[in-house]
Every structure is written in structure tokens, then in C-alpha cells.
Length: 212
Image 1 (cartoon, rainbow, N blue to C red):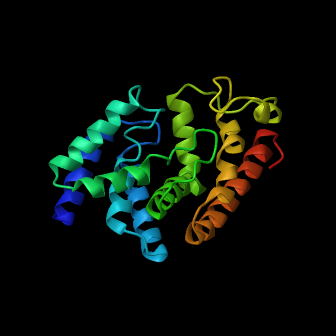
Image 2: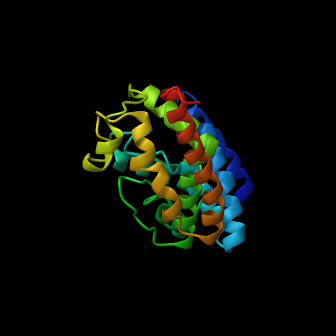
Image 3: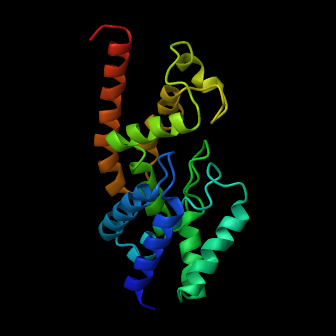
């Protein structure tokens, strides 16, 4: 199994597949998550190969992006098999990406590699990049930017409710991620990014209210 060649082919496949995305789930998101997963794998002594491959493919079966999740997972398995990835390794990769998505709750992956990929994905939802991706997704899905009356009711609504604003998303998901990190390495990285988001929100409200 030529791991470097598999990485190169996977990156090319993901780049082609997500090149047209405007929701913040483009190929650059995948590549950042791969880089973060590699860093975390080294620090946490996990299987870096499994972490990186799972990070590359983690959004292919994302329910926000596809209608047929089963078909999307099958597509991943077919690609990996064609690349010569052994069945046992394919199974470990599946375990590492199947519970990555937030989905309004906290599904803890079964393996260390899964926890790392989940942490890497969630780190990319925080900080400056996380803020940019949130507004990109809001724009792509037609969400309003902000409604002062909606923040108070965010806890009473279902996750991904259609009447929420982009600012609501900070409260329903992003500000919760810091405390949901699985690994100690990710927790340290998340703290700084979380603080940056809080500063952004304070500045946003100040400018919105004309108090800046």
C-alpha cells in the first residue's frame, strides 16, 4: 500500500468533488481538517494515516450536503478499495468519520482516530475561519444575518431550524464546541479560537447597536 500515492489521489478526488462548494465545506475545509488531524494524531499518538484519510472524506456523507448518505458511504468504500486500502483499514477509516457531524448533539466516536477527526473538524468551525464559514453557510442557505429577537429563543428551537439566523448558529453550536473536544491537544487549541469568537460577537453587537 503506497500511502503517499493514496493521499495524492484522495486529495485530487476531494478537490474535484468539492471545488464548487459555497457553504464553507469546500476542498480547503477538507485540507485544513486533514492538517489539523495530522497534528493532533502526532500529539495524541494515533494512526496518522487513518486520521488523514478519514479527514479527507468526512463530509462526503454529511446530511447537510447529500440526500443519500448510504450511497455516499458506499462511494468512499469503493474509492478506498480501488486505491488498494485493505478491508480492515477501510473499516477503521469508517469508524473515524461516521460520527464526526455535530447533528445537534455530541456523538463520541468509538476510536481515538475518530475523536481526533471530530476534534479537527470542530476546530475548523471555531476562530476566524469558523466565523467566515458560518456566514458563508448562512449566505448559501438563505439565512438572515441577525434578528435581535431570535437569540433569546435559540435554546427553544430545534437544531437547524429554518427560521434561525446566522448569529443564532454561534449559540446553537459554535460556542458549545470548546467543551465538547475529545483530546487534550484539541481543548488547548479550541480555547483560543473560542475566545476570538466571543470577542467577535461583542464587537458585532456593539456595531449593530451603534455603541462602537
